[in-house]
Image (cartoon, rainbow, N blue to C red; front, side):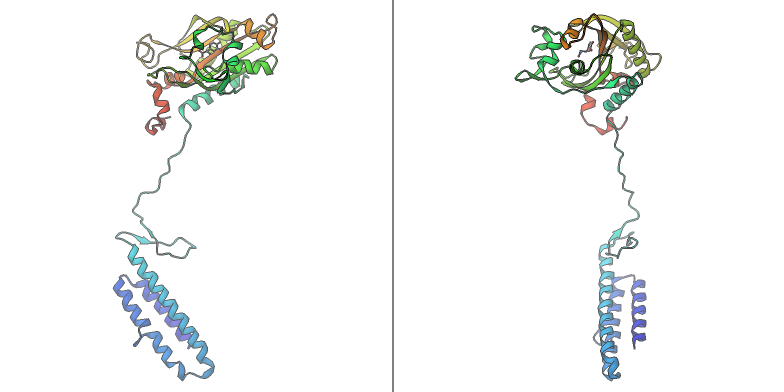
Length: 348
Ligand code: DAH
């Protein structure tokens, strides 16, 4: 009798596998589980006539098979309910079918790759250039004390950059740093010469936002201090940097300028790559874009940090990361960096 039951089991399995419509499943249900003439019921009916020792075990097996076939029928029906045209029921390997549907005609799931923001890429690239020149990378706080942003940098109390409309004041002599030159002081307070460092970071100014100005932007400060450092070292390092970053053919212009913390000072322009020097909104129609301020560290600054100005000389520079990135890639509006538009960002 057990053999007969396992034959029925296999047959039911085959029948269900071949059924391709709910109607057919209904028929199979009647055939196997129907009260009158159903295969299982026919078996149950003959149990009383079996030898006593077979009755109980056959009854149990017949009941198990009945439940099993019932469950298969329900699963098969569910499969028809959830599948739609063109779909295939496809259980994952090793996982019991839940009647779920996998539509093979759907396009694959595409997860776009993340990438670094173009400004981060520029900062990384510049860090790498200066790392090769043995410059350390240093960082300083964005919320600063007035002392580091102004006093220690030889910026007098009446200097226009200290005005409210040029600096975000937080009260209690704190402010959002308006330049990364603050890090020069913090490093010189901690270390003795020789010093070679760059300090990348955010700076903040209440500027009116336009194609070239934002109220938060990035700078990279540089400082080299040792015995016998000269202006020609400054020119050499900055030329080497500009050629590494923009390519050998880059045009640079050093203009005499003034910064309270350097003497002499210079501003360095790069020829405008957006208009090829013809004049546009990014270069204020001049054909040049100022990207760097630089100079020889003022002896007053050395005295403030306790360095002997008779023994040491040094140069410092500060560059604008947004401008350098705009020039390199021909980006004509600084606001694009901060709008988080993936159509822009995914180009880098
Ligand atoms: N801190 C200046 C600025 O934000 C840039 C600068 C100029 C930095 C000259 C320097 C320097 O280190 O020597 O405009």
